[in-house]
Length: 283
Image 1 (cartoon, rainbow, N blue to C red):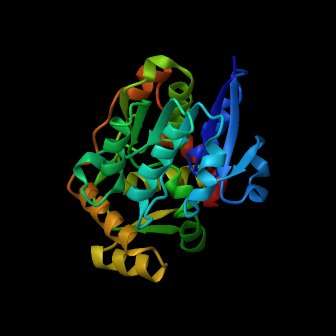
Image 2: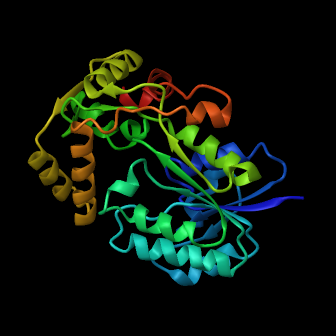
C-alpha cells in the first residue's frame, strides 16, 4: 500500500534531498509543495501549489496526504503563527504523520519560532518526529558561494567558534526514514556531522577541494548586522542570525551527536566529502 507524502520546502537545501531520498521507495507517493510549480520541474515528482502566505492553498495541497515533511518559512515575521496553522490544517485534512525540520538548541532560543511550533506539534495528537540539525554544510555553497567566487573569502561574525556542520543529505535521509517507518514516531533527533570545525579549518578544506585559496575573514557583530540589513534580510532574521553567531562564539555549537550513525547505520558525511562534492560552487 502506498503512502502519500507531501514535502514542503521542496526546492530548499533539505527538501530537494528529502525528495531524492524518498524516490527509491516504491511505496512512497511523493508530492512536492511549492509556491510556483512551474519552477519545480527539475524535482521529477508531481507538484502542488503551496504558498505560506496564502492559507487557501494549504487544504487542497494536503487533501489525501498521510505523511507531511514540514518546513516553516524561515525568518518570516509570522512563522510561528503559520507553522501552527499548517499543523492544524494537516490534522483537519487527515494527515497522520508529520516530520518537522527544527533546529538544534531551538528550545533555548526564545526568538525562534521553532520553539513555539515544536510545542504545538507535540500536543497535536499526530505521529511526529522532530529533526534538530546544527548548521548546514550547504550554507557555504548557497549563502557564501558568490562571495567566495568574487573575493576568495567568506565573512562571518563567528570568531573562533566551532561547529559540527551537517550535510543536508544526511538530514534528508533521516527525514525519509522517519516519514516511512513507524519506529521513529515520537522521537526528537539532534543531528550533527562527525566533528566540529572552526571557520579557518573550513576555509582550508574548501581551498583544497576547489584548488584555490579561500579565506575566512572574521568580522564584528555590528559589521554582520549592517551587512544583513543592506542585503534586505527581515529584522527578525537579522536578530536571529546575530543570536546564532553569538552561540557559535560562546562555544555552544561544537558538540556532536551519534544520531545519524544510529538512525542510518553509517557515519555522517564529513565536511571534506561535502567540499569535494560541491567543489564547483567555490571555483
